[in-house]
Image (cartoon, rainbow, N blue to C red; front, side, top):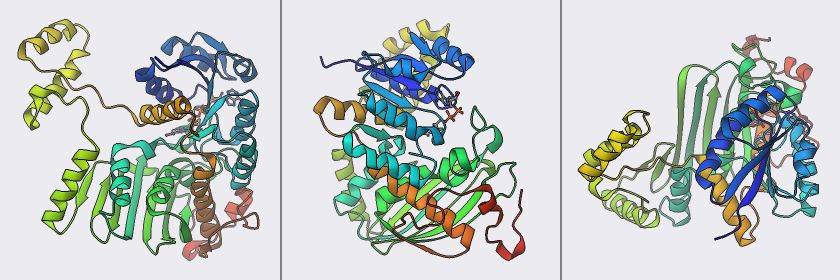
Length: 410
Ligand SMILES: NC(=O)c1ccc[n+]([C@@H]2O[C@H](COP(=O)([O-])OP(=O)(O)OC[C@H]3O[C@@H](n4cnc5c(N)ncnc54)[C@H](O)[C@@H]3O)[C@@H](O)[C@H]2O)c1
């Protein structure tokens, strides 16, 4: 049996639960042994709920523990730079929540510092580990999709920006670095680059149409990649309900995510692709007696009922009697991400999703803001001469290019 790593989390706000729950299935490999937060109430809630044995209102006490190997930074984006560096100096592996920082300038400082700590930081782009994304990458790398042509990435959400984070930083330029683009859609920007490769040009519009926040609640952009492919993308937090949809179209076949779909005009080729995928991604733990749609449905229902308090014992018996082994719940994207991190540490490899590999999504965010503010296309690469390199200011955003004079300034 390998080493069981100790992990501490700095920041016990909204995303803390996803981390604590995501670690749970990996408890034979990693233990959540400490948490730190400036706010004692949040700290208590987290430790009560997840039985975290050691809690601190000063993160330095957590960093000083010898039994902690990995530290997760789950605090507002403008605090990441200082906390990541302190954790590295304390000799820890670091998982830094996205975005890497609130500005491209701050991200570049972290990356420069990383030269002293190679391979020790992973950035929280857990969606790269979604099975549908991994299948898409595999098909691309095995030449099944053909040259990329077009992408469509859309995320519609329904929530209030001003109360989205536990400490009210969402949408504040100097803390989060932006709104829907920087804080939400950066996941999709990262996925686009992960799939399509480097960006060469972007044209964007962004505005604050409905929410009482400083930064944008809605945006749309068109992106050109170095390989010639074009993608359109958009997001708003003002939708009546949530809908997330990605489509990536190659000359031979297209892939559809997050719910998996694969399309190809040639039926024979499609069967070949599906057979190759089935070999490369064998389903783990599929119950024998539950093959077929009906069986799978039964197994899922049984699994759900098994956890339902008083019915638990009865259902356990019933499960045994009918001979169905219920399918375990799918691991979360966070669990898959942590698993990749632990595998890397075990084998002495650099951690996945390095700050260097997370930078292009920050660069694209910055370019989207620069284009939306100026009303002009923005060419890559971006450097410190870009007007938004140090971030967008409230005044800078107020003076943004106004589309047909209709911009709703808040
Ligand atoms: N990967 C994802 O899907 C995902 C989803 C949501 C949020 N996030 C990211 O996670 C981070 C935190 O977001 P959140 O929504 O949980 O924020 P939050 O405001 O709910 O919680 C942040 C917590 O950090 C604490 N904190 C701030 N500075 C601190 C310090 N110096 N030391 C100790 N504690 C400190 C605050 O008291 C607060 O409890 C952000 O970077 C956000 O973008 C990622």
